Image 1 (cartoon, rainbow, N blue to C red):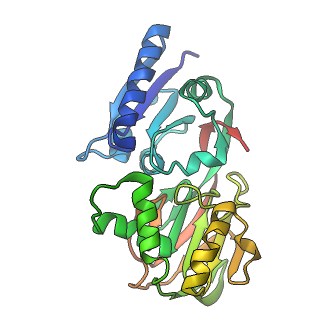
Image 2: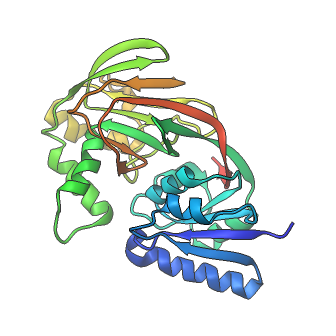
Length: 294
């Protein structure tokens, strides 16, 4: 069967990097006689709408050129079960750290063309799908601050680290009313991450043992830490060794409900969402991807 590629580019991703990659893909496909159509997202037509409005059964494969937010948009607009590939151009690119697609444009394009097809899980938070994870509390506040607190002269990952350091010592723990696989529990936490993947915030391995195809949510709950402890222990989050801390709980679940709390902010796949209540569950094997699983 002749392949027909649907190529989606987010021109805002990577401060123009994605558009350059899109042009390289177009040049290669045209030179090889590969059938494709390229679409760009716009402010008035986000990725989910672009996919929903233009993806038809004639397409055999979908390539995403963008970051985690673009991937999230795509899976929420996807109506057909077809293989999805990734050429990352975002600031964090956390999801692709869970898979192997190559580190160069050439190897990533080769994976998109010839890589193995694997089925992976995706998560569901209320009616919003996610591919990597949901963060509530501290990391949700970071996502909200990225939108609401303008910082001149810095952008991308540097902007993220600025906001982390800005509130790392002062952020107060919040009460979380949880139902974990039907068992109610109240916890006082800095953050709660409910994940399909391992890595968040451009390299923090909050759920280091998560697997994309195990049919389970991986959860990281971090309890009260003093301001000094937070600064001293932040590197353990990058290494994924924070499970040694008594304030950290790592576990798995099929479904998790977070009760309403106006003090809590949240993100989905790195993009600010809103406040709970949330019902979070897993959709096993719901997405085809072209990639090598770690």
